[in-house]
View 1 (tube, rainbow, N blue to C red):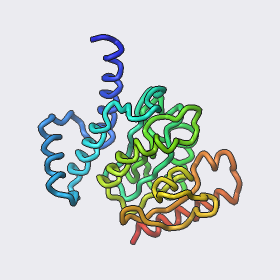
View 2: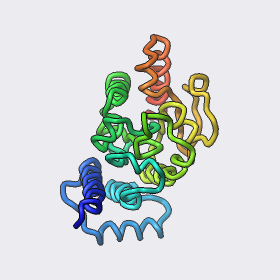
View 3: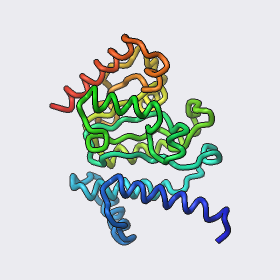
View 4: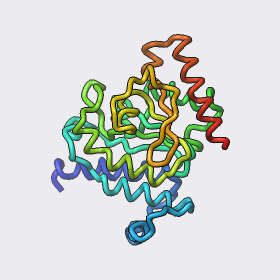
Length: 240
């Protein structure tokens, strides 16, 4: 096989195997098992609460995404960053897009902002990042120079974000920053004014808060307290 054709396949295989590990598989499921699950979802709109059903649903979404070239972000990426964490999590954190470290590793929030998010989750909320949460972005490929995703890029990725959230069915979604908040609400959001407020996304409680990278850039006591208060509201909702 020629190298230009082989490299995208290797990237897709790496992403697929990483995701299988993330969702708890210790061996590769056969194609028939995956296909049967897709058929079952087509005839049963309400997703089963069975853990394996949720797992295979996310795998099916990632398989449909494939080695995506639906927008120009694919031209400069190293890896598609699909998502990671517990596919049955009660809480999903949604960011805007991968950065350099995420693009390199194929995993969301593993750079400086990721360390800050882990700190918020584990020290601030008392949760385990891998066991208690699922983390993804509104776009799955890195925008050049870490700029905000453009409208057509968000539109190309949005169907997969929708399917991810439907598969997980969390109690709470936390939108991290303006692009994620604006995408999930379908309107322009002034995040510094609207953070800490509850909304709904497809019947799921949605909390808006500041992006971890914003906290790094503007590391003030006021901003830290604001995010802490937002997460206290989230924890209260999770306990209901």
